[in-house]
Image 1: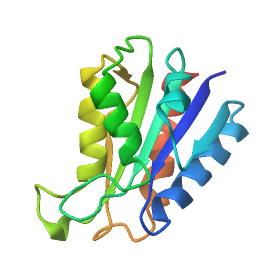
Image 2 (image 1 turned 60 degrees about the horizontal axis):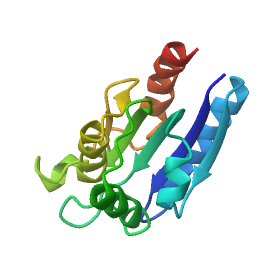
Image 3 (image 1 turned 120 degrees about the vertical axis):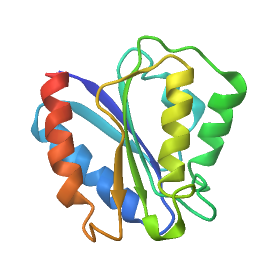
Image 4 (image 1 turned 120 degrees about the horizontal axis):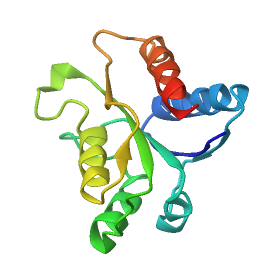
Length: 151
């Protein structure tokens, strides 16, 4: 079974709620999972032979939340190549803020992970708060597909 680190960027707690629910579903499926709400580069690098999920809301002008930004900055600055790392990104956003800002936190993380040569297990999931008041309505089916690929 997979070892999965879940790295969360949250402003008001919505992304955190999603992350903890995803972690519970992973454990129910026999996988190991841990949620990081104040993640460090060391936490992240520990999964370089395993799998990470990034669950990020978007703040301001399409930016990464403050609690996830130090990890993003450290990855971007140190740029450790991680070709064995598998990943998935759940991006939470609101399309009413405009296309260039929509799910910006998750989009930026997805791009960076690709640049450090990590391999996506599934395409990034963009969750639009204008359409899905309850993000889990789309996250759980996406997670089901991801679990089939990981098994």
